[in-house]
Length: 71
Image (cartoon, rainbow, N blue to C red):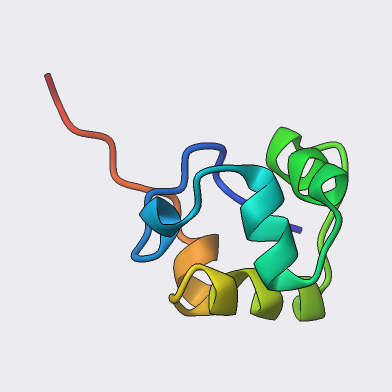
């Protein structure tokens, strides 16, 4: 399974000051989000949908790696 990119900067990423705020909005525990970001825990489709809703994006956008800029 895929995991949330550690530095996801999608449409809603700037809305949250902390993982705790994001977790509250998504109805999840902060430690769960942290574990998903570190790749120590997999997410379910339900969690993917909750995170996407909280970040004001779509689930598929959370699965696509961000493009790295050349520099």
